[in-house]
Amino acid sequence: PPVCLAREMSDLQQEFVRVCGEGASPRVVEEGWAAVRGLLEQRDKLANLASCAQAPASFGAQFAAVAYLTGLRLGEPTPVERLVRNAGISVKDFFGSVEEQHLRLHPGEPIPEALR
Image 1 (cartoon, rainbow, N blue to C red):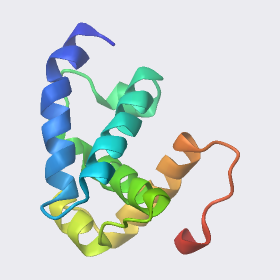
Image 2 (spheres, helix red, strand yellow; image 1 turned 120 degrees about the vertical axis):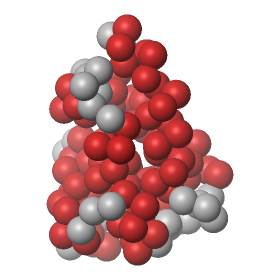
Image 3 (tube, one colour; image 1 turned 135 degrees about the horizontal axis):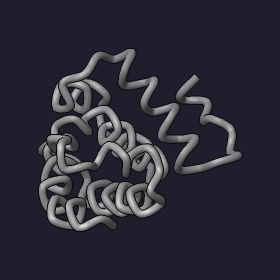
Image 4 (spheres, rainbow, N blue to C red; image 1 turned 90 degrees about the vertical axis):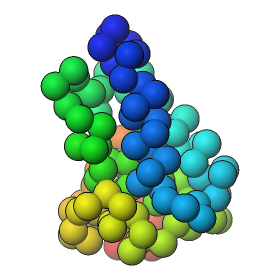
């Protein structure tokens, strides 16, 4: 990753943990953060956002979506209300981001029934 991104990785991780919120499953936090790192290493849209100019809080929608998808996959869902509140986003933006992150994390897989 770019030097700037490496320097900010701990800030991004702290923001991811904050968005997950208290009471989030440790597995969701750990595996969700691993998914975020994987997306950043792909140098795709999320990595482009992770420039020096972006504050960690600007990742709220993406982080909330990854946390939600990770929780669904592990059978330990994080409440949507908590994620939306912690990320400071609307429910509509949240579900739009969930769909986008699903397509990035699981290309070619159908969107889960729970998200339709």
